[in-house]
Image (cartoon, rainbow, N blue to C red):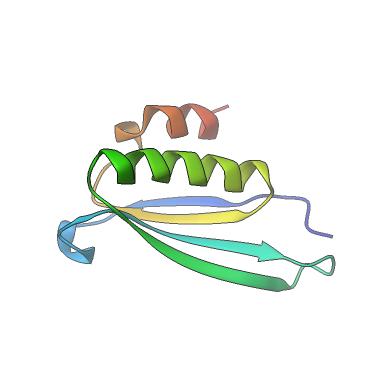
Length: 87
């Protein structure tokens, strides 16, 4: 059974998508620690994308889902998420 949750954050150039706030890959695992589901989501830059990004990433981490983020912004651009990660 998977016991650790992994979070990676990469600040990238804006070339991933000019209108993207972040590109996120969520990976969940079965009881044998095999990848069960992988979902990739592009969050649009704007108030709704920002809210959805922080909310969905924090819920995924709480649920034990691995999260990989690529964004043209540094982690400090997302203070709520940064506070969760730095705990």
